[in-house]
Image (tube, rainbow, N blue to C red):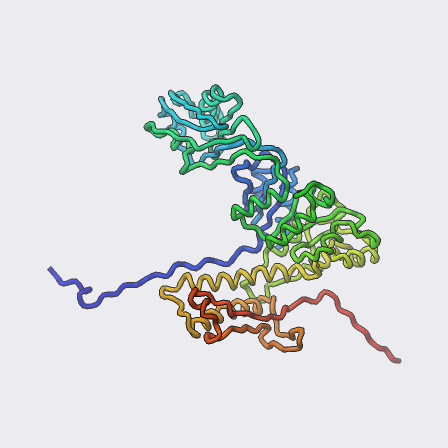
Length: 496
């Protein structure tokens, strides 16, 4: 027997956790009231291409029309999320997860389960699925086996509580309460038999998902619920029915949508079809109202074509910006947008649009058609707002990963503070490289040769309470935006 080498040399290597990535700032959320595709238990559904959207939504749906405008842009954007607003009362649902195969479900000949629906318990016994036919792999021939299973489950459920349904949606079983509104409730399925019926059907607590009934939602209700669920999206475009609404009920107006996006730090890609927007004597149009609120996260695009989704096209173009690349940031001014019909407006109307901080695809000269100006309701710019969202996340992520990936503690010393400062500087340097930030002058006349300046409170000036609680609040920075040329004026003299 030999002596192990570790008696003389022992090496142990620890592995740091993988750092979290920076956020995705190209996700477009589309808010719609079109029911029948996404159940309340989901509330939203993410897509990665137009073909995926077409798999769920009809060509004449507003979802599909908005997706076309988004995916028609170059470079090709990817992330499109449909957000549901249920404007009618909804029933409670239990949506299952993965199920056994039809062949395996046929082995259940004396199955049993319990489920609570609308406050009462339904006990099902002697469930026999042995008669279910397999059908053909392509769906031809006998009725789909999963549909037959759903029908056999529905019989005792409906016997116990009339109107209860069970269907299979191609992925999972769904049991729906016969009532709607706040009193409509449902539980997970439980069972103790062998094989376990609830698990085989994918309807146990470990596999399924419940959605209790609720009353009709407003757009703000829907957005608040989705936000609370942790759903991530960078910008919001709405179904055309939510445009130019200034007199609707609480939680439904366009200006409230702008306010919500401002608080949630989501870019409100608003579209207005109101022709009064082009009148300088009118200040009650949505574009003017958003400007009066100085909303930094709202951009309004004018279009007289109600069926189009120009705002989805605008974000589709800017969604593809790769902030981690060099000279990659863009301005949306004078960009061409596929699927958007250009506006034939007079120079006076165009000036009114600019004065109200609005944008549109317009005809320029005899041949050009382009989007202008991309100004937010606050007077800032879309590329600035979008870029600063990325920068905030980049610095936050770098600082988190500094703490998260360290195998030893970051000491609360001047060296530790300097380490944190270096992470902030790294994010600002990335902003210089991608074109968001550039050397320039601060409003007080101070010139920043790097485009930014990071300041930090020395360790000796940190309050003892903060040090005891391991909190450092002393880092701040100043930066100069690179801006963009949108207009150029030239004067000249000529002499014979």
